[in-house]
Image (cartoon, rainbow, N blue to C red):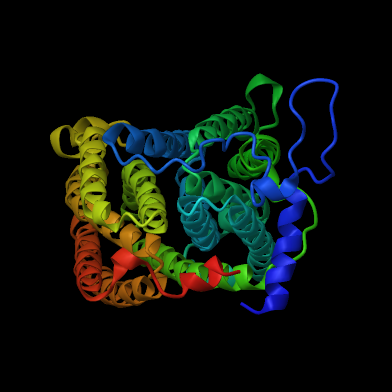
Length: 500
């Protein structure tokens, strides 16, 4: 880092604390000169930032549980959406479901951008450098904000030009898809704000606000779903379009809450003083985030293409697949919480120079991941008939749903392990090798999925076995990378951010 950049960084850091000559007071001790506490910002909830990270089970759960509960709340919202949409009709749930997949693809690109914030904030927390934590959050939220605006423009532009029609075969599904996405895509802008703030919270291991945020958004979404999808409580019944408006409104409310909470409680230093750009920190954020954005976007885009393949098999198979996607989302509740906790723990421990504690901590996180997964998804194995009966009357669709839940349960065992291994590599800063692993795995997955849907069409439970192949490839790739790379020391490129 050049000397001029260092001077700029020092100027930025000074805005985070009280500056002034020492002078007597009428009460209390005299105010110390700022040089005595250089680099210590006024952070109202970070008084213990210098304490080493506790890797005991209880503290790992303290970090992971709010994330997982927040995801669980969002999963329940998805179920509520599906409940109201299924009452509106099969076309509504399929059209809105396919539009939701497009939206999900772009939200995952934004979520990938938030990973860089989390890794950098956790690393600087481990080094007890709150000034750099603030710089990392500023750089990341600026980048994510611009990304959210850009992606919303792209999705809305393609939708206005009718470009998404190429993905759909059924004109009735198209009639629901386009207006739904035309509303839903605006949510990418507040979603970018949400992801930036949540990444900062997770990087600091301050995850409790995530649950409060999720409850606020879920409550807003459920109430508005009832009012705008079916017209309860004096609302205007708009069908699938009402669900899109409800979700967008909930995201706006959540983004406002997250921004205010972060600026006043969890990280006020990152909102204080000049917003002068830190180029080195922005480069490091981009270096970490770009491969993850590409990875997440490619993964979800490929998964979305799977549903468009299935649409050509039949409407019953598509409905089963959308419901099975929700079954995966329930597992995501656990795996996302433990995966994000793994990234924070790995990055923080490396920053603290405690690499010898990495493997024991990772094993604990893997055990917690499987424990939570079996707790929430054991029904897929032991009572799938009862679960499927909530969405199907006795019919071939019910039988297909039962069989597909069994396939999903096996896939989830591979998913739980792959999510931890991939998070270890990401937390250590090796996001580019992870992208390569993803690229190879996705390529194999697409070939298999295409073959079993459109070439040698199979029953839907067999089609879903393509996920087995994908997750096994991810596990093998991650295991090979962990064996070959010096992940315990962290990626060498992180030194640039440390000197920013």
